[in-house]
Length: 163
Image: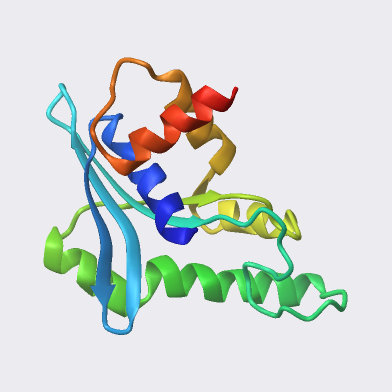
């Protein structure tokens, strides 16, 4: 499902006039999506987007799939490690700079259901903007004008059909 979710998020970004690159290798890691958009006022938007969609989460985003209750510090440490791994590690920064040197990247997480919403609050504190996956799907399904021949458009047509 991860590939389908990434394709749908990529289509959502494309419909907002972003040029996207998906599945960028960074050593053994991967950047889900980099998105660049030039605006009418000559400014540009640079979004590093990670897609983490779960419908019935059994683990935590910030590691530790153990069912025991975590302390606030354990939650905070786990989320900080995840944010570093996905967005801020030297490897990810270097890879983004290889593609577009010195861009000011906005970090986004497109997320489904989470086991502990505290993780999302901590991500916001760490500079990650959050987009619920339901919002992405709703916007794709409601946009009848900007369509493409992508797999994602076909999926949104199916979703609209079953409504």
